[in-house]
Length: 287
Ligand code: FE
Ligand code: FE
Ligand code: ZN
Image 1 (spheres, protein in one colour):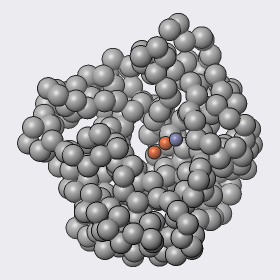
Image 2: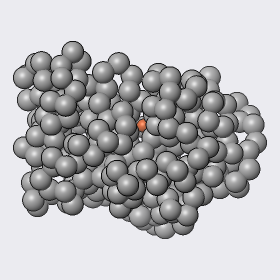
Image 3: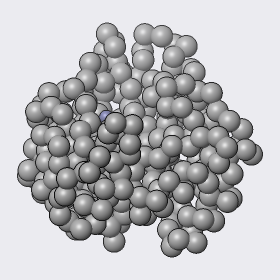
């Protein structure tokens, strides 16, 4: 079954109830949210998030809680080997996000592996794994999905083998997965026109069973640009045909696919983009 949705907002006064309403308005059957602003670690108390109302509405509409994806804040950088305080605060924020995810009843959390800055890349990969090991507990019922990154600046997770190195060093391997972002891997140099080839490589290096969630974005830049600028679906260098084939690929069936494309003149494109994927046919976004 096609599971498709977008990143949705979560804000006062309805919080998760509002997020669910937004997703339903797009005819989505998956959604992704940040449990607070992505750039900072300030968080509204769990008790105020209107979780029960939101989850009931989601289920009443025939949807599954496992298709609610949580994205961890960007400020977490477990890969920073230069500043111990960044590593320590990253672990604290990650721990709190795991607790919030479990309070919501969601399981998949997307985490950026981080940036090595001027430090040694291999050490950064190992430290990212160590941070996760020090935070994750046996009783946690979550999957931390490491996101494939575009390789902008000193980002780690820029190719499948870097993610493999992190995963190899994780202790609780049943709690680790991967979030494949189409814009990021295109910018990272992978040829999405040959998606079968990309999946084969993913399977050989990481294992397809670790593919937990996908981010579906077009890219403003050419393949290999390492820029990470998302474009609306059908308006970038990847194109609708290729993205549509990826979204409907049998090996990605049932995996939640989340759009993180830009707003157009402060209006959400997601309803239109989702409709185009459901129809398998490109129509211009009328915004
Ligand atoms: Fe991300
Ligand atoms: Fe992404
Ligand atoms: Zn991105």
